[in-house]
Image (cartoon, rainbow, N blue to C red; front, side):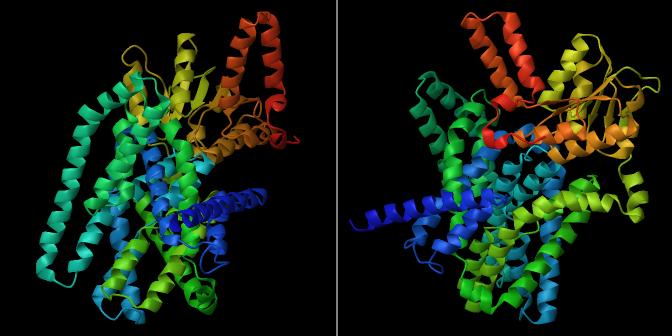
Length: 583
């Protein structure tokens, strides 16, 4: 009976300290993720020792991983998965293969590995990146639906799938006769799981969710969604695959049904709560004394791995036809060592592929690389901007960023340019077409361009440019000088700002309407020169307010006057006080 109160206390300490660490990080304008990691270090067994039962906290942390990947699966629909399937399969195999080869070669030459088997093992451990940390960082930045975000997530999901093969192969690496059967068995397990998941997702899960939703019980709906997420994750763990993979597939099962948004809304609070435990649990593994005594070795390893992986990932992403901007951001986002490398490292320790000291060094290296990830992702756009200013790259950029596909009449004029053909862009295009206005769409997703062409053909052919909207070469093809307006509905905040700046350089008097991704960005985009900035959440609130005021008897003219004033004032009167800018 004494263990239960202790566990409740440990959980309370972990959550309370994580909240404090996240708050301090936020006040210092750093990602909350860093606050959680440092919190774990402080309260863990190597810090103040406030956390007594780290294993139980880590067990709960696995639930956080499951919820993180489940939410991603709900948002990351099968249609979007097809969009990046080439780089997901071929690109991930290239990345893991080249990383393993590089690490194996370097470790054998330097003497840190005494056999090819040890070198291959180290390569497998270091080839994995962190799904949880990258996903959390992209979510906080609102970049999960951007091109670079989806490329990163596609590679990460493939790595999680490959983890099952790695765990099957490791025990028989030194038994060549057993290697083939082990690989075949692991592949068979994956195929059986995916076939079963496909069948459940098509014939069972939609009907189950529909019947539960019909009860109109919020509790039943939440319990069913949680049970589905953890149940499928448990099945994959029993098959020797990763929990993350199972949870992601569970999310995909309901991503295409009508209740996907409701399921996502229910799971998000649980996801955020348990995810902070996961990041804190990583911090608990860090031994500050070990870091200090081996700081030079660990920093060398971190530098070698993060720079080396970035240099491997960069050309792979470029080879699949993505822009330099996407390649740099993906390489900066995936150059850490993943949380599942802890699992592989433990297997290697049990197999005596690494010593206790090397295992401890690996833990420190993994933890530091995870802590640096949010900083690297934040740094990537600045590095991209610097690279684009280099004269030596001008020729390459001219060739690589030339629009791959375009359908633009040379005499087009008085048109509205819509940058981004996602959900918002598609609705805007339909509104403009219904009123008879000429439209030109700019989009860097082949799937979105194909949807654009199929949706309106053969009645009308909408001019489009296929390429990155913030590229000077793409902008030149849009005939900005003869356009009436530019509407920016891009999912990437950085691309939004760059396009706005470059468009105004070429056409200073152009009427530009931009979509804001965060409340703080409203003032930034306005100061950069946007004629109007739209914040979707505020607009939804204004529409709701309009209907409520109308119901309460307010006159329509007065309501519209109030709404117009709020918009002209850049939503200042309805923004939280700490989010109102000075501009």
